[in-house]
Image 1 (cartoon, rainbow, N blue to C red):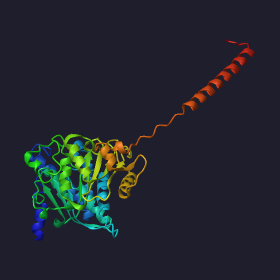
Image 2: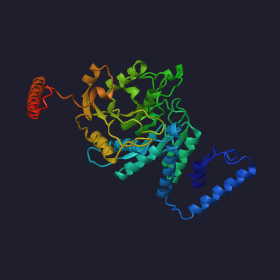
Image 3: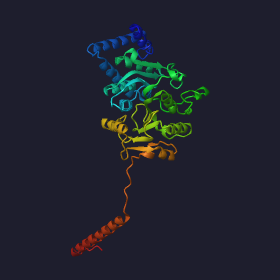
Image 4: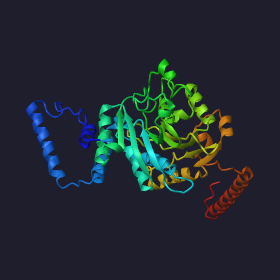
Length: 411
């Protein structure tokens, strides 16, 4: 490809959402021009001494995105996944990219985030895989919001990524508006070795009769209008490769809600596609205080059980948001990697037990963090009470004798 054309494609429309006539810059054209000149001057003064290294520029941009998210409240959920949660998803996909025969990391052809926001999660996955000795041919993202879509593209470019190393598409994931993914011919279907996502929680949507026959949903059915959580999940799962891993952040409701969601969840379990359920603490996100879970799905799962990790109690309390310490992060990842069982923390649950529970995946049903009640020996308690009363009587009698000797008999 002509490098000039690639450069033009990368930057096409990148600043289309900037409104230079906004009254936030000033009431009049003169005021706005003056404000813009000051901004440009301050940037030019600071950038002269700033490193042009792509890692430094990219890290600075990531920092600014994080700071912007911290001050954006609920709106932050549209474009930013906290780094700690991003790291968990990245490590899960990275761990599963290891070749069991050689122990070496494989080259992953494609990684997808179908609700990519600012692209931070995608970049985190790519970085983790490279740090662990693997490589990724190309990362793909999709984002519906035009401003956030441009944020993602800028994020890629500032991290030094070439035009051939990433592709971000602007369009609606639920309607599958990306032609490259909308292939009815199975031989041309684009598949991904790793899929990560933090889609909008319980988004209301309007599924129509056409979507009911959509190749993504036909086998499992449509998610209800009240919550598109399973629609997002099934979209990603359809494009997952046979040996790939998908890690998606969802609200806890998907684990136990009934109706259409129960039917989808049940079939996924019966088909042995749900590998792990991880419960995270509440108030980790800038946009919501609700606790969330991570579902890990695979098409060719080796185990016939489901690993439950209840990490809901492991967090550092903050003024505005809670956080997960590095130690807690390591424990989650290690428990997932080795499928270890720990009292009141993690457990492998058979499909027979899940079936008995009506395919309900509520984490506390299988891994409770509450302490066992201390068994009380009533005979022992009664004996202690008798002994205490005896001591009280003896002490009272002695006290009264002293009073008599002093001529202060009050009885």
